[in-house]
Image (cartoon, rainbow, N blue to C red; front, side):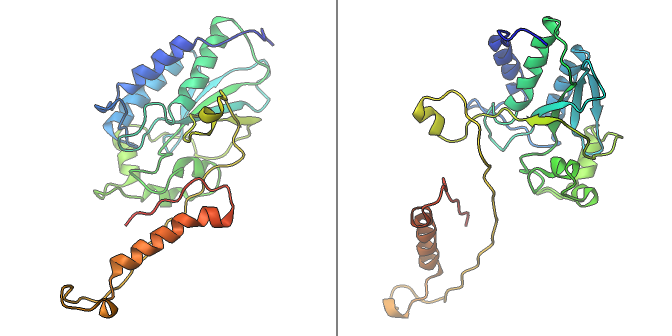
Length: 269
């Protein structure tokens, strides 16, 4: 339906990313834009403004997921969807997540200015609280949309200060009315930065991942025995810290021993 030589405006995409990066900017060049914070609201407002400038049909569901739909030639066909998230990790990177939202935004800008109609509709989505930093777990609202999580359980999630997810969603004005329910889509694409060194090492510009990291969280409690460290012989000591140190080192050895494609293990004490 268009020119195969058509390319997006890279400079405009960069400018869009830099404009977003001003919201919640940190001194080291990153961003802190936690889900449902004032910074998140400001970034959402800007995103919705840009969607409306493109004459997209904007809708916000009951979990604050934002959708921008561009009509196709045949609107009865399921749309192609692309997106990611606006919220960040604490002191996160300026491209993480947001690139996956600004990328399809730039693609639609390019389609519009070249008067190109696609056969199917195109939908941009910004999922709420994908990072799961302020409200655990991650991918909460896309999870509800995909019928994997219960919405009432999500509404009752609290942050470290005891603030409820639903209350904060209402506070920033992004609790929409449409159901957070999966709708038919033809395909879904998420444009993302590489978070490891593999493509850069190999000099490859872009790659398609075959999977995504799955995290499992465990609380492990080690009990030692209180004793006077100085005069107690080594054979009489039961040091919990030493046991923990040995466990951590063993975990670090596991990827090599398992000969698996594991890129790293993290342990928080």
